[in-house]
Image 1 (tube, helix red, strand yellow):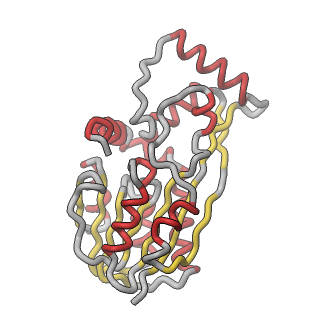
Image 2 (cartoon, rainbow, N blue to C red):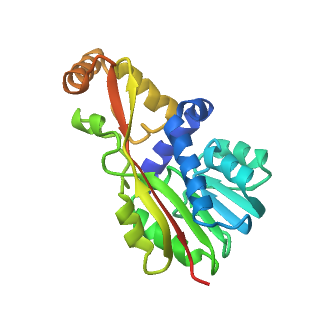
Length: 252
């Protein structure tokens, strides 16, 4: 990531660390889906060395530790507050940008949920992960696709993540190195009473870290009017999520 953007994203997620876990219901569902896909794909019960990127408050971390055994687990995050997640599961903590920190050698599981969309080059990251895996190792990753927060894009927000990619893009990045076990994507929608509540949701989950907009009374009113005009229903206003994922294994 660009250093200034990285700093902004890190500060945003750090500020929202206490509110993220309870507010990020969609991200929790995605973590559940990744673990389910691992089980259905025949993942082993035990991993010798596992590496999770973007652990955050631990939605995926805790699910993994419930379902699998790890001799050594390292979790990474941009925000230093996530050291609490590592401590809770007795994992090593690797703080920093996933694109620049030094990775542990030859893990047999590399996983990440709802993080790679923040990278400017998810393809290179996925290829590096595929190369870093030990023979027989598993790559289990989710991100978000181009329809993510499409309502915000329509009303002119610049807060969207830079590395949105479909499941086909993820598969294409690694299929020459790994055997694809499964991949997929879905669309889901959350409803909010008002556009202001959408903004509060984004703030609680830290995903507005790239936005540089300073809200005024006028700009907030314009945002609200535009959002309601284009997307308002009797149930309020929607916000679209577009999770994408891939599960793959390295040949032995």
